[in-house]
Length: 305
Length: 283
Image 1: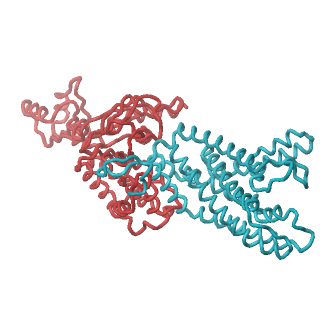
Image 2 (image 1 turned 90 degrees about the vertical axis):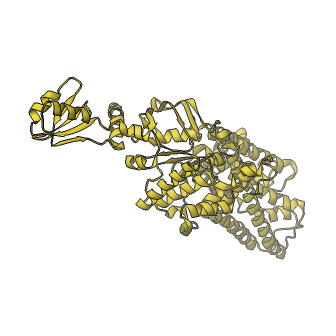
Image 3 (image 1 turned 60 degrees about the horizontal axis):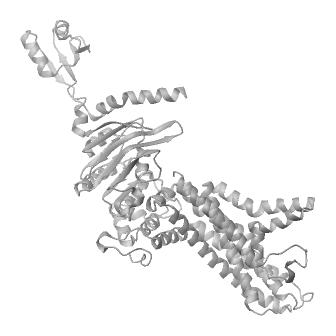
């Protein structure tokens, strides 16, 4: 369980995280979405105390991260695959981190095996690919067998097989009752992995809802209509709340009316319909709809600096 | 799992062991010995300590040196490399912490030890102890190699406290200077900056102060130079002289114990500053 209350982080006049309040619950995968620079990584760093908040607070399992007796057994974190000394071997890296909590060789070998690093465990990390670095970061996060996992862009640099592995792992960990909080900029990835999504834009939470609800934000809002009587029917549909956009000689897209309603209207006015298709919303559409303003705002802000 | 007995409070075994200072010490020891830079720097220290001592001893021809001042001579031969090996210890000391800032490892370290200062302290303890041991072993090896050469040239030295204490002091100087650079590294957070600042303080500052003191004939400036870390440190491995004045140069000499105090004060001051910054800054 991660709870943030009015969490803010300012760098000079820039508000990287701006009065953010959310709760990440155990037993499910919570996705953390947002455009680059939205403040996802900063928020995650604030959770584990690498950055200190300008105001507000964030707790993990009811306490500040630093106040836990065994932080690594409470929270496993992958913030940056490069948080490793390049001159050390993977196994020594994990042994050094584990030693702080009395975690020994047995568990280190376990996480190496879980993350599939057996063949490179004794090689120096400097020669690792991005994907191997991610696996090592995830291995470090799993070391303490923690109840809460925070993974910042875990699929970054992984091959398709690795992506599926992370997805399965995240779902498996959540099914065990753990709190899994992962960020990604890959919307489709999130749709397949997360149960719940928190969308961050320009340092603020702009959505916090189950995946289905987020997808529904854009589902059914648009309907494609094909009819030989396009001109007359589109005029019939017209009203201040309804937008009709022609997309071809006999097709147009309607927003503001649901498909059943349009069908009934066609039947009552004797219009022949060749097609009546609700445009299925995707998480990507929902995300773009949600973050569009934020992105533009950020771009505008950058330009005036 | 059994490594952290003693410091860690007793806790139920089911939840597994928690964060303990003994564990952090162990972690820093694993980190120190698993890097090539450590192995290289320590190997260089051993080689130049023994090599320079033997080289210096071999250049003495018989005659010209009586038994008077034999201990001074033998100590000087054994510790001749220190002004150089201290630079190597200093570079390694800086790298111990700046290597973590440079690679991002520091974030893993501070995630495991979120209170941070125990990690910094453990680093300082582990690094100073291992550097002290390496320093002492190489100085004793140098003594073992050079005493017979000196004896063959008519300089007989008794192996007693008067001879051994400066060697221990030399190893202590090596360790303390290394830790001082570690603290500087934690303050500046970059390898280049940490090494440059440390070497500047050890090499350049004493030279500048000394030259200005001589040119302007300012006695207090000449005396003040004694309180710089490398100058004060040099008294840690010298044989105390009656009256506290160098018979050759006429310069004021500090007592070895007082030299140790001065160097320790530098280390303590820089460690406190680095601890405050490490605790307060984002990383």
